[in-house]
Amino acid sequence: MFGWVETLITASIVLLCLASSASGAARTSWPSLLGSREAFSPELSAAIERVWLEPTLSRTIIAPSVRAPLDVYAAFVDTPEVTAAAARFRKIQSYEVRVLDDDRYWGDDGEGARGIARVLRREPRRRIFLSQGEHTNPFLGTIRGSALTILDLELQDGRVNPRLTAYVSIDNRTAATLARLFVPMLGFIADRKLGEGLRVTSAVTEWAVDRSGGFCNWFAHEPLPQLQRDRILAALPTCAMASRSSTAAEQDLDRDGGAQSKVGAEMGSRAVHGELLKLGVTVSQATVSKYMRRPRRPPSQAWRTLLKNHAKDLIALDFFTVPTATFRVLFVFVVLSHGRRRLVHFNVTEHPTAEWTARQLLEVCVYEETPRYLIRGRDQVYGARFCRQAATLDIREVVIAPRSPWQNAYAERVIASIRRECLDHVREASTQNPVDVPRLPQRDADPPIAGQGRARAAQCAATCSGKGGEGSSRRWASSRIFAAGA
Image (cartoon, rainbow, N blue to C red):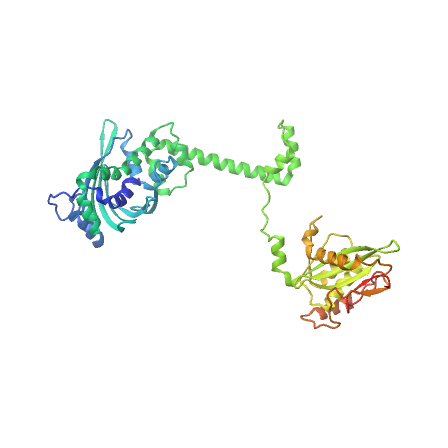
């Protein structure tokens, strides 16, 4: 149980000014209830003696009786983490308890008090604890103290009568003085605080023995330490049966559900939908597809992240059409570098083919550093010949989604600039009359080449030469758009 373990650590300290004065009766140097002093370490023996011989206060609290078996109540006393979890579930208290080992527990009451309780002795009807904790308040600061607690369990007429005797030692002298001053007036408040843990344990015990309370169902699904779970199951055999049944049912459900979902994934939603209709189950195929298990895929970065991380190694390719004055259609091919948003290559043809497009990619690599990635659309002009050329140049193609021009937004933007600043003012007649457009970015005739782009492209040109379309392939000496003579 958490209550008397943690409340004893904290309540004696938090409400240290509300307790009664220490008894003046003379005591022996060592409590006889603990047996031999040699059974404990020197440090632990010294802490016990200090609390036993020089307590700041001592209180005896008799809690209301509980209609429950003695072994069940004792099981919740010995499993404070289970008691605290059940109290949170029932919204009785919001204590937090962690098991450090079989005889030590850490607890926090959620109001600034925390500490560690150690079980010194376990007997069939008695438990003895040593608690050490602290509490921080705005008036007295951090107050530390220790408590020696003796919990006696008396069984009478089928009811458990718990009695708590606490010896508290407060390290802060101011707090200890206040505790002795205000004892006669407000001692009942300290009794209520110290008895709060006993009330929590009694409420959880009554819920556990109530057949309609649902404790066993909650206990079967709550993640708890195995040692504490075994202690509760030893005292409540009915919960042991419910726990085994629940575990077996969950394993069968997981096994059957996983097998059915795996079979369904292999069959497909349409086949599963058909089988359900044969069985007389009326459900839509969309519903079947919604609840089928989908295969796990490795996480991938978003499109915007891809463009940001690989901007220096990306080029974008795109075509756009230009109607001429003689009612023909010219296809303009542009290549844009993502690093500086620079137009690095363009060409014009009336009949674009995969071989012609592959030749343009080769020219880009001759006069520019070979990129790692290229972004292109899904047009058939990027055929098998183009894909082989890209693979030869060690360029990875990134194909945009269908009807998603926004994924190639930079190329679309430069095309819009060309249309707005150049083509909206002239009408093209043929591909034989070039007119310089100084507005477009310029490139030197023979720029410096970095990396192995020139060597790799030259090797590819020697092994993979091909004829282009009607449009003449050209290096970009000065930016041109083919238009009618001015």
